[in-house]
Image 1: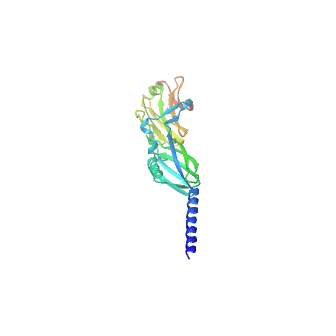
Image 2: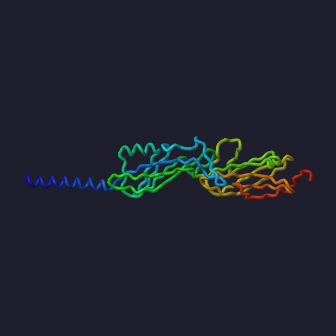
Image 3: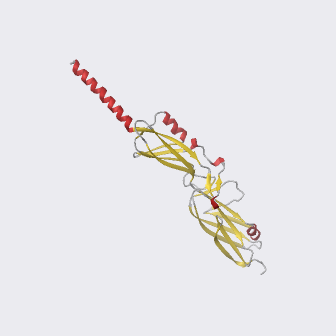
Length: 245
């Protein structure tokens, strides 16, 4: 009887060890190394650097990990790291690690949306896979400028970009979703005559675009609208440069 009990005990120990080894083989960990980029592209291959107040720290980034049929989220990278320290593990599989900050799809003044992602394969034996993620602005920035010629001919003018009123006096940046937008201008001459101008342009992500309104000084009054230093619209006005002509 004692021999039988001893054999059963050995079998239980062997089974427990085998199960523990299998568990080690099938799980691993993820470490996240995050870097936030404050630069966006600009015309002529220039770079525009965002104000530090708009750029989140790595610790503030939201974490989303998707893989093995599941989605895991943490409000901040700090909370994720705390979970890792507490023993967080993942079943061995490929995982997409996404870091973000801001409201995706939101538009308006001082509303940047940062995001970056990468894929890692979580190894077994409780080993760690490191996800190196660069996070950058995903929406677009637009700025509208006018030349002295334009301002001289149109002392009063106002602009809108897809319904957002442009305010050149603001120190903030206007962030919009990438894609096609319509820019409208309501301009008033010294004589009080009002003119409506419009141009459609396509915005790129991670880019600051400049729209410039200029006025030619020869012959008929002609408004040139430039987008990133390239004229995209030439509008000949229906009246002469000389109000008395």
